[in-house]
Image (cartoon, rainbow, N blue to C red; front, side):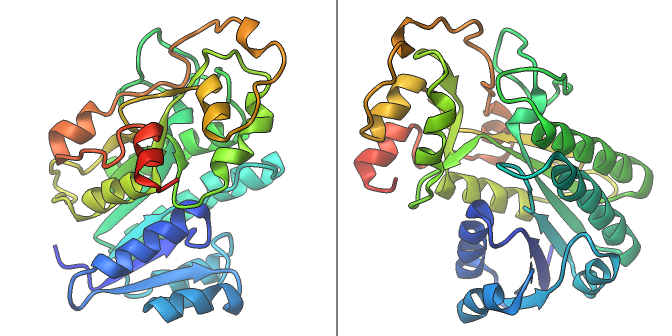
Length: 296
């Protein structure tokens, strides 16, 4: 399907900035990319890369409708999580995402890619999470962020079923690499974890290639291989807390290696659907592979 105009929200975030850059570099001839940004200064960098910035707030209906004018596909990466009040997380992650989905239906937009998180699965099932698992509150990192993202998924899927929104959901693991400080920023939180606690990871380059495959895959309101489906975006090798400290060159916190990991499957997700249906393969199957390639 031709996508002459693609709207990207959340383009100024760590995932959005890297995704938008690669989208612009790999876009098809005749495709334009519009990015919704909060101010002109943030938009200038995207304009220099060839995007069309539009200043506005995703939470404002008038801005949302302006952003949707003439759009053929939406990539909703906007998210509010670390360090924000719960009210803001719900307003951005659920309310704004669902409002954007409704606006897409009203505008006749052909395709909607919702970027979510593996944290929505919540409580462990004693095995890797699969895309058919429902969200259950609980787990090491449960809170307003995964809860609001889970609600957004449910309401957007209802728009798919009831109004034909060609929805596809990309569910990200812990994203790192390309100089993202995320890898170091997690250490204060991880200091209280057991040394054997595992964290599901994915490099920015692999997150982007997965999202691009989802965006471009055939689908449509009448159904298709990806329409109305969700895909876990996660590499092949979860990392232990000990390894996170090692790769950052930071000494292990006192007592970490004595703590017990009560659930080895907490937060671990399978990537088989993405592999089998879209042919995705991680360029960096583990964080150590990324380190060896010099792309941390």
